[in-house]
Amino acid sequence: MRLLGFVMGTSRLRPSLPHASMNRSIDAMSFHQFTGTDDYIASQELRDAVNVAIALEKPLLIRGEPGTGKTVLAEAISADLGMELLTWHIKSTSKASDGLYVYDTVQRLNDARFGDRDITDIRTYIKYGALGRSFRSDQRVVLLIDEIDKADMEFPNDLLHELDRMSFVVDETGETVEARRRPVVIITSNNEKELPDAFLRRCVFHYIAFPDHDLMADIVRVHHPDVEEELMRQVLIQFYWLRDQPEVRKRPSTSELIDWIAALRRAGVTSAKLEEKLPFLGVLLKREQDLESVLGRRARTGRYSSN
Image 1 (tube, rainbow, N blue to C red):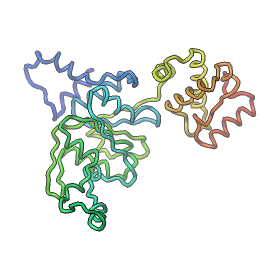
Image 2: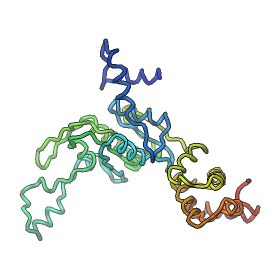
Image 3: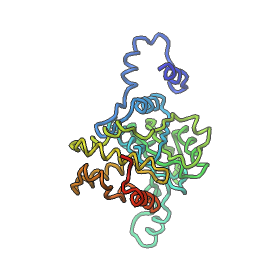
Image 4: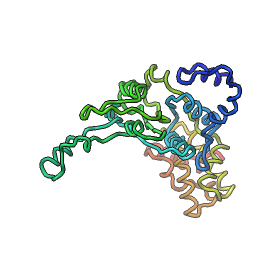
């Protein structure tokens, strides 16, 4: 808690006020805004990271291996805080300006040649992106910038520039758009490439570790509340065994585990059958080499795991 107080105290966005002891309890209540949802189990460390980012009005950078709930976190924050969610899926060709708006020249040209629309009003051809819509919103929104590491190296710093200004000019119309409320910005990364230090300094960071056995059981119960305990036990044994195999390059994720359990239950597979074989491996393993290595172990030893 001492570190948390230091971070908040040194923020330029929200300086502390003298003689504010009467407001401390109110401030504490307003700080703990995100508490998780029934459908999303968040650790205390993750809840703290979200609430620090909201309090400091800084982007929250979330890293973790695929399937740990990075993207779904933004949906949970949106649901818990009652804010609209705007999503920007980053591609290798994405530019920061694309998130603000694009001028649809192709549509205007088509309308001029084939349509009967009035093409003199350029504003009808301005298509605002998720970042631009978050600036234009009258209410505070949650803005998810998904998989930022897919873009080129210039993108993070360009994005930071736009988030710092919180305004932009639509060149084609001369209109200036100024943000009414700073959005809650959630940025996800699969750590495919390093992000610039200047960008990292302006973010609150959290790494979502892969769930341990007990937390995973809680997550499974959210999606399969009536799953049999013995089936749960055997499923988790086999799942974590698969993840621990050094030959498996793409380890199965939480979402794939949820799907696997659904397939097992619909097919009527019992825990006893799981001790003999692992059906529907294609739900968990998505690389041919991974499947071959697991099936090869079965052929050599007569079983999949050591249990």
